Image 1 (cartoon, rainbow, N blue to C red):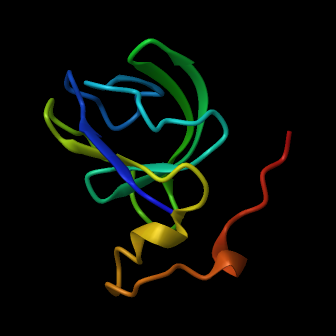
Image 2 (image 1 turned 30 degrees about the vertical axis):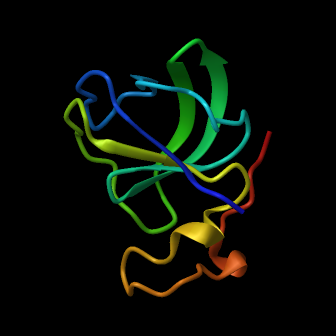
Length: 102
């Protein structure tokens, strides 16, 4: 699966659930993505280049503030393609992903 890269277009606080990106190409509602070294569990909505998200600091990462131009990577499916931020491994164990409750 191919990763799609863009950047934040404005600063984002550690508790922000709405963020602006330079391009939303590759963003998929319901899928995880990464800002810097932080995983975000899923995109809830896409409105142009504005994303509403759920689950900052997912998969063992911490929600932190990010500056405009911070890298954003969309995977379109699961964070397995990203590798582990803690170990540098090439995949994350799927069993470690928390179950989403709606």
